[in-house]
Length: 382
Image (cartoon, rainbow, N blue to C red; front, side):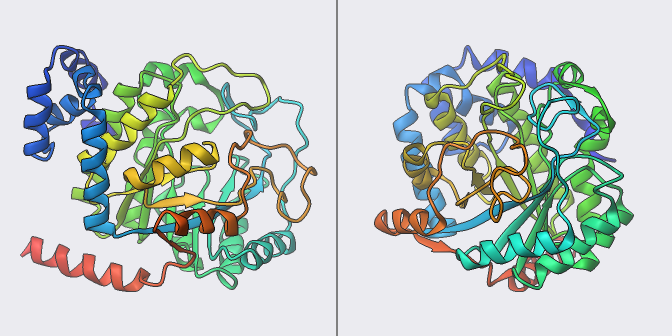
């Protein structure tokens, strides 16, 4: 049984409605129980929890340091293509928008990876719009294989695939798959995705499971904040992450909370998330998902990222570009969205060290982590 078969958005909506009537006593009780149930998690999201946000933020910080230490993994996205057959109303790559389109040749992918490596980045996320002609499985696998010669860790954020294709990516060296559902609200999802293969809600929702069965070590999920009510997205994301932790235990689960940024097309989010609610979302994720990695992108300003880093974040992008070829030849292709933090990887690392954190440019313990999960999983099964 897949997550799409058990996920009920109405149940989540009912929980959000009930949380509006919860008290600070309910919030404290949920903290004591470590938010083990979705009802507990709903309490941590309630308006009552907002009055305790500073206290919850301190708990989130302590929980993160206890489990992950004061380290921060750094990565950068490498965009392969902005050519797309999908019409997604919020995306700067959406088909029909008048942007410069480009798909990198393999030698250009290698050049971009080498440029990132020269800047200290050894953790690369290959990103692409959806176009089956230009960005097909053999092309992606070759991009992974060649990037892996340069970076020890290579992950993918591309179109949802079947299990066989994910196995092809794993054989090429793929370490992780990131796939945001964008919104867990089925009706909203249909309204935002009006054309192309991305319209398939359940196919996308179950893609992380197919990737896990294919042997992908790290699974990244998230919701694009601004498309639907943020409390609904938060509870849905936690239910999804917990389901993956139980059923895909060989893979490390990471979650992300990207906010919609300005992009070509001028999309205006129907449910904008202010800074305080964004902090609340982050703290909630750490308290409800104590073992999950939490990723923060350069969609946020440098000041915001510095303030959020101690509250639960374990991975940050640095020195990013959201355009194909944007590191070696900036301006030659359209961006997916505008970035807010334009610091170099070195500057981001320097800022982290000033806060007492150790920036990590390379995942040295991939195989060790996998072995530990195998042992734990075997023990749980016996």
